[in-house]
Image 1 (cartoon, rainbow over the protein chains, first blue to last red):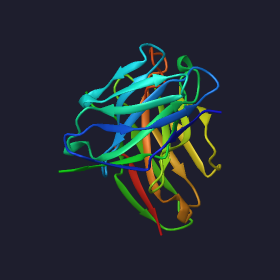
Image 2 (cartoon, chains in turn orange, red):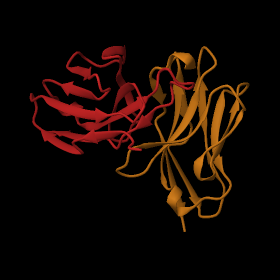
Image 3 (tube, rainbow over the protein chains, first blue to last red):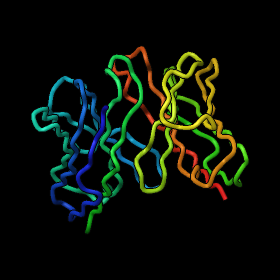
Length: 116
Length: 115
């Protein structure tokens, strides 16, 4: 069965400092992996996705993530945090072979706080 | 290009009642998935519809049912509401025939409160 574990429920950084949100995954096959962001009272927005191409994936708003098969990790990073980055972040794994579509399996979320 | 839209935005019901939530997918998408997000939790997959049929289902009771129409829009119905059904219900659309069919785009959600 596929699953994701987000290692921190809450991360707090100062504006202008780097962001690291950690995610480990478990999958019996080569997975598709995603990061979504959810701002308060808003829906989920896709930040970036990995689908077995380049292991370093660049997303929107300066975020990027690196797929490391040996470590079963897919950590999200950003060099410099902005106040507008404060939100809930979800690491997500696809539940099927990517060419068959299907359900997404979400982690529990990491709340990112950004201090001025 | 309109994204995924959902209605209503908020809803209050009492235990035992029935509710219908609606979703219109992103233009060009043919598949609709529904998720339940309880407070402080990640979304949980309810089911997915393609070609007007339920294609996959998560671990939810039969009180949760759905429908997809020929124009690809979808409804989620919940019967005999329980207090525990209070949650944000998210609709996501995707294109099954696309190069990345698992990439899903989410609507803003319907917040359901059961009293």
